[in-house]
Image 1: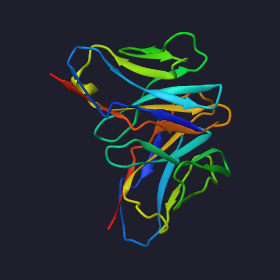
Image 2: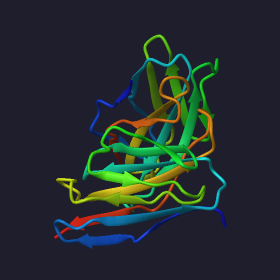
Image 3: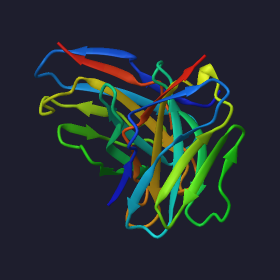
Length: 113
Length: 116
């Protein structure tokens, strides 16, 4: 079945450590996105990529980094520079264009301990 | 720049009744798409309905319809015949085609509770 897979579902990190969240899709989508969601709030765009080897900062990119070496994969690294990383992270993908919806992964809940 | 505003943090509706969830937007792009998603307590995001900025007709998908008023920059979601399973958080989102090409922006969401 085609879909988008995020791993792990739950992640615990010590302060000062970098951590990488995985996002893989087999939908042959060109565009991929990373969002952060805090409790009871909406999604905020961290980074997005419309094509391999290219990506753009979203609204809250500070303290995060991404790579897009393969079409299927768009990993997100939460660095120690991110002051408040505890949140729910959602990855999404879509075909190019404005009229197509995004497909979302199940999310990764990151907790800093 | 683009922005989505959802002014209703929480809404209640009686089962089998209709409910309207508000969404207003702002964008510098002349061409854009508007989307609604549902997020149950499990956290997954479920696509509901899409409206293009140049579409003449309001979009409908089963019990969901989108009341699109371009001059007012509003894209309200109407759910008819509410069901208990409709209880969830609902997000309005947009994606631009020009300056904001590829960038999707979400509102803060509305939590809908359906009462039996």
